[in-house]
Length: 319
Image (cartoon, rainbow, N blue to C red):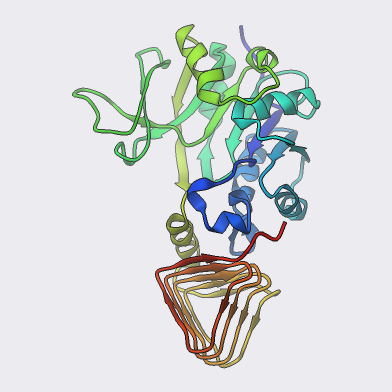
């Protein structure tokens, strides 16, 4: 079986973001701002750059807020939202979007996690899937940290022979990393039941048992943004040595902003110092306060003269 290249993509953005708590009490993880764009924008860009004609994005946790961020994205292709009334998990979310008619009617579907920074070159992945006709084809990278993330092993024919939990590679093993991008055949997509279920048990394991789970090592940039600390580091890397203030933030002339992001709705009063930090989503920093290597989002008020160091603070949910 051979298929054309994908004309539709699914961006996964519905989960609770448990590891990103407490920040996900205020925003869904894919909606977290990276300067002037939400995190999910990189996943949508990855899909657009792969040449698809339409993108579906599923939502559930703080769905309205996630959808607000999606509406602000400027994309040259059609984008549809699949709001879930119960969390369908990854495979269930794909099946529900299929039933709603927003994943096209032919060809494979590109699936991209909505909570990573992407800049992957996917031509080899798409060409391999079209040529070989596997049920699912995973984009893979040389492993960055086997102790932290699962390890994928390929056989000599480029098919996945094992997926190991995090840990030290075995002797002779060449560990590969799955960065959250794959191609799913229309055949397999059509067979998914509309019920909660995850990708590993619904897609990967059955395809691997049939010898039809492919893998292709790709090149390019990928960065996981899974925890508050990883989020802060991702923003600091984007900043370089500069500070960034949203046009919708209020920063007093006497405040000092050093290598930090002051996001929409935030306020920093006179004499305050914000260094290597994120202040966003309505958070306020009182006069003379100091925010050092911290993330402060939502309805948090740092009082005058207070010091916050190495903390991740979030206000109440504002759905």
